[in-house]
Image (tube, rainbow, N blue to C red):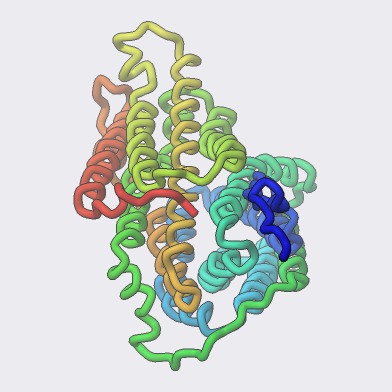
Length: 454
């Protein structure tokens, strides 16, 4: 008989070591890298195009009214096609939708190129803008849902952080490159210099489509639901039933609707800080700069442990920063603090940058929660609802801020007429944002209780 081995003589059992997740492990995924580069290139071209459209229309017509129709041409396709776009993203190959939609954007950009080269009637510009808006309406839900299949679930929050960060970088670089293209494009009476920007966007979107085409991941479509009223509105039904998703989308909707001050930045630059075009460019870039810095920082940190409370605090700080931005000038706080105009300008810049920081955190939390809490077969439709809420709130937010500023365009102790309206609109919007945060925290306590973002 053999003696039984004593515990001390037994071979040691190897202990499994926890796998350490590094910040840049997601870049080992070739498909995600292709997607990220493609999105950056396309976003860069899009940011340049947005500035070029406004600039060309104002150069040709010398009126603010044509600029208002730019937002309208983007909203109409969104309202018409959001439901079918979401349904298509759940019942058809998402990679093919992205490629086809991106090619349509490229063709529309090519149309804008020839419209500018030939100085065609401005009606053609709006026609191609409608095509752009329709293509992007189908692109957004498919793209948002597609990224969930490119990375493991545990890397999703970090992937969304890098994805959002590349968009913010393009938002900073786009206006700068627009100015460079315009400066290098010869001006003649037979064509408008904006054609070079449109041509760049056409090439950039083609490159994006090529990169997405070579992504190996294919979205496996489950048994497709027949097209019906029920299937089309499934995204809205799911959002309404999921209180966390409904709460975070509502919070972001009203924060953008009330707290956005981008539309009024020309007034702040010209009539409040008296810094002209250079001041406007700095103010336009402030939020994007803050968002880029934030994206770099949170990409190197573990997932948020109290995501719900963090998002609520961030949107509240966004409202507070908006209020301080509106008050940071010689006409308001400057009456009690004898500081030079340059100080108030850079203080206002800092407040916008702070708003960009907290907005970036809010975006990452919202986008991650929407994807994590939605079944894959419904992600397209829910992403479509999300993009509809956010897209329309951007346009309506600009309209709200401009309308309030117009209604309060009266000379007072706050400065000239335009300055008064801009300050009142911005400050009241920030106050409204904080009230919305309190309301959302009370109506949907599930958000406050949501924990780790993974």
